[in-house]
Amino acid sequence: MIYKKGSIPISFLENFVKQRMRVMPCVSIVISALLLHVAGAAAQQWPVKPVRIIVPFPPGQAADIITRAVGERLSPVLSQQVVIDNRPGAGAALGTELAAKAAPDGYTFLAGGSAALAINPHLYPKIGYETMRDFAPVTLLVSIPMVFAVTPALPAKTVQEFIRLAKQKPGEINYGSSGNGSTSHLVSAVFASQAGISLTHVPYKGSVQALTDLMAGQVMMVADTIPVTLALVNAGKLRAIGISTARRAPQMPNLPTVDEQGLKGYDLQTWTSFVAPAAVQTSTLDRMSAEVVKIIAAPEVNKRLVDMGFVPVGSTREVFGAFLKREHAAWQKAVQISGAKVD
Picture 1 (tube, rainbow, N blue to C red):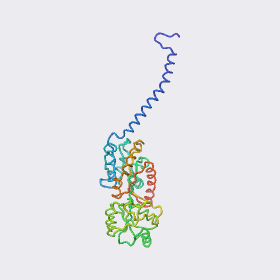
Picture 2 (cartoon, rainbow, N blue to C red; picture 1 turned 45 degrees about the horizontal axis):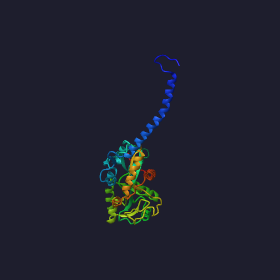
Picture 3 (cartoon, helix red, strand yellow; picture 1 turned 135 degrees about the horizontal axis):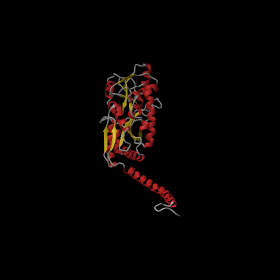
Picture 4 (cartoon, rainbow, N blue to C red; picture 1 turned 90 degrees about the vertical axis):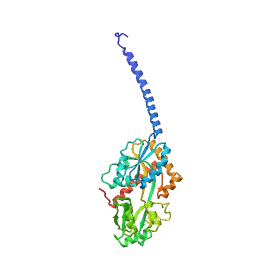
């Protein structure tokens, strides 16, 4: 072949290109494998720095107490500090939105409850997150049954006796709640709707005021959680007539459920869970879920939670994900029934 000095034969260039084309796929495969190996190793190493759990309530409230009970045992298991970050405000919306917009790197989780994740999205016209879009389920920590309690002066000892009394005096029987759109308001509104009775709602600025007036006979019924009602019931200051969940509560095993007493299918509860920003790696979510479930199942933790009035759960991510969808729909219906609106 004849070519000028300094030039490169065309055949040489063709062979060079062909060789490069044969080699490059192999190089790409090797590089891809290395990247996958590095990514897998990084996922296995999680966590390599402190893990933050946002609690959208002040210290001392139920979600905070539960989170700290789990967090103190989670830290040594993960070999990293677990930081409880209380971010109260706007009915739990402030902290929940902060968690939704956090970097999805596996170092921010949310102690999200029924109010933040299942009620507020239907209650507030404008809210900075969408539960089913912005969060990935980790585990359901505890269920918190509601107790239907009446003033001892009311001649009703069961759910059916209360319903009969309400039907005899339509609109004259009232009930208190911890506020418009609160869990205590919604469970009572659904109860009245399902029972076919007319009750008058008296909203208060918190459980303490509602229960104080209930003991004084200013209101006739209040539905609230076991942790705040159990001591008052045991002291005879209130009379418990039913439990809101489908199963009886371990703290009050002799108290029949509302479902058992005729309102079939009635099953409402408040709860606390761990969720994470939606894009967090599955391997990180699985590890976090598995470790927390083991902590919840530990006898000393389980007993501690029961003694505080909670029902320990500790579910897999899949089971909790299905539960969250059902609760999101159930509380949407409850908000619609109650007619509650919050600007």
